[in-house]
Image (cartoon, rainbow, N blue to C red; front, side, top):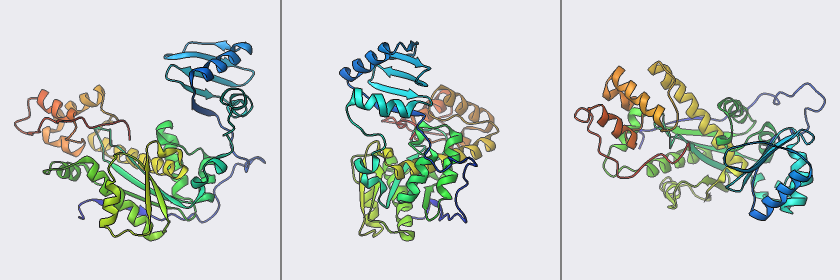
Length: 354
């Protein structure tokens, strides 16, 4: 099956990564934000600490409490879901000196190599982007990294791409791709071909994504064999493993779990996939003459109508995923189902940004 095309490269930097001119440039950058899930008793303990220190409370939607602490150089928001977000220059000191010893009773910050030794082994990370976006392609990315690379990426601020701005994603994508010895593979197809594939009998989005992941991974392993990899799980079925077997990939274990972006190499793949999605969306926006919206909300639907009005209903296939319910609704509302007979989807697609 050669109908998808793969963008791939082995990027090797000629010199060391640029450093800041100050004397502390080799020191790890301190955390400026931190997120943790706490239970009710831990929430109460944290609230008591905030009140005892006479921090300034302020209003944040959906929180149990929120405080500004000029002395500690942090803002703290504790949400009703149990999530606590700490942000500011004093984040790392507060987590290490207060949150862990007095609230969670567990020292984790700075102990990643002890708690997660597998993170620092040479391995592959797999993630995708665009699955929940109406406009733009579905991107699958594989990154193969090892300890020295991971340390550089973490120092630069690499994490799950959903937690970062587009500008930061593009910056980190450049750093990752230009890391000495890294292997980066990206697999996707253009929108007309994507829609052609998804219109075929028994077409399935997860099967297509599994093929893309297996394609990127198998090509990466040719350049740099490693023993195992981690996939951000998008289905309970071992679909990618089946595709790897078809491609005769041997002596390799593909592990799967949800929220796999905590693994630094999967986080790198998340960044690479999203950066490529951003670039492809930029090209599609230039083609249309207007910045296309991400996601699948009301603004997206309005733009889909604009595409139909400006370019005709068949032009929608050049920009959007026609198997989304949004496509059916827009074409039906435009009275164009006779020209573009889309079947009403039986299930909803679009499960979030990635």
